[in-house]
Image (cartoon, rainbow, N blue to C red; front, side, top):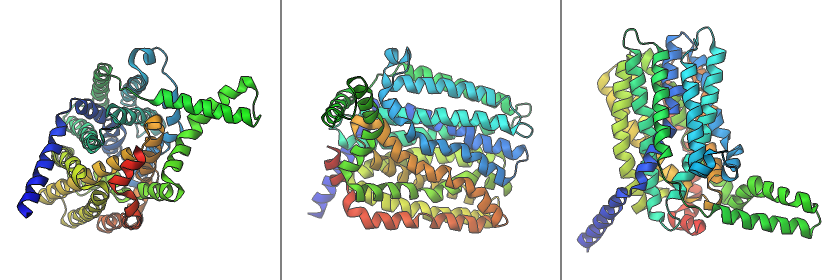
Amino acid sequence: MNNVGQSSNTTTLLQAAQLFRDKRLLWIFLLGFSSGFPWVLIGSAMSAWLQEAGLTRTAIGFFGSVFIVYAINFLWAPLLDRLKVPLLGNKLGQRRSWIVLMQWIIAGAALAIGMTNPDVSIFWTSLLALLIAIASATQDIAVDAYRIEIIGATETEKIPHAAAITTSGWWTGFSVPGAMALYLSDIPGVDWSTVYAMLAGLMLLLSWRVWKMPEPESIRSGTQQEAEAHYEEELEEHHLATNESRHWMAWWAVTVVEPFAEFFRRNGWKLAIAVLSFIFLFKLGEAFLGRMSIVFYKEIGFSNSEIATYSKLIGWWVTIIFSLLAGVFNARFGIVRGLMIGGIAMASTNLLFAWLALAGPNTNIFALAVVLDNFTSSFATVTFVTFISYLTSRAYTATQYALMASLGNLGRTTVASFSGVVVDGLDGDWFIFFLLTSLMVVPALLLLWRIGHHLHTEKIQDRHR
């Protein structure tokens, strides 16, 4: 009987793996790449540039405050569910038009930021970085909505695979161009202006590819019209508006209020608040580590090329492989178990960086830390994306996903901006810093354990339907 069970499990796993042959996953991969790529422009490449320009750890940490827009993009996400981009909207559709427009803005800002000099004009560098962050955060809203809508509402078994592919795409967009930028910066005669010009060209190439993709079908318009009619009836029944203003009040209610109201109605207040709290806390420690990682590598003696090889390229391959495996695992065993395992493993691997802080520029330890960190991080990320994708209504895809993703980004952006302050407060003791990052996941895991019986895959699927 055990053999039969193992055979059945093997068959199920093989069937789950075959779901990756879906052509739509290629489009999701490219869009994931587009989401990860701007983090090179204002993240890893920018950190290396600012460190070479002589900025302090604290200044570099606070420069990362531009990422705060990723934590608040839910504020304008409703507009991406309702408003069409002039001209592009008719040509490309609701989702692709917003994506392409934001990619054009990112490319233009990347070209401009390469012409600044951060050691003497940090204001203009910061302003353009903020523009890239705003456009990138807006692009993410449309990208996530596209990913969820392109997979049919009844194809719940493919949601973990889509999450795995988008995670693989994100890390490819972050790692490959990031490595390219660091390699180029080490070539004599190549300055950061040239590097950013090449990165801007890559973004334009991505926008051309998005132009060729199909637009997903959606029930969004019909559901929103029904909600508008309901709000208009309520306003008329209570005599709260004139005939002329009633339509506009209903439009704004459906655009701004209904996406959030529907989320809380469907999940209940207690579960909704518990879920949102968990989302905020889950990857906080990883965010602190990520914000200071490039600075740490350079301070202990690694070159830009070594960082590119170990942190970007090796980490990239590991992330790709284990993201795909995580998609199969979550489809088979459930997301709550995956979240718990991923969170514990993610925190544990932070201790390897504490070891590296003691050992110095040891490439063997560096490679081990990067491989294991990318393995656990990719596993946790796929599970995390799957989790919030299940919880998202298809009528308000952009808004609800942005709300949950923004909370996850809030820890990674706003709170993690103090990572440099923490390191400086510890007098540069990187060992203690990494110990602290490994402990930051504990509150999230306690919360997950407390509410886990509400969050298993079957109940989430039932709520989603």
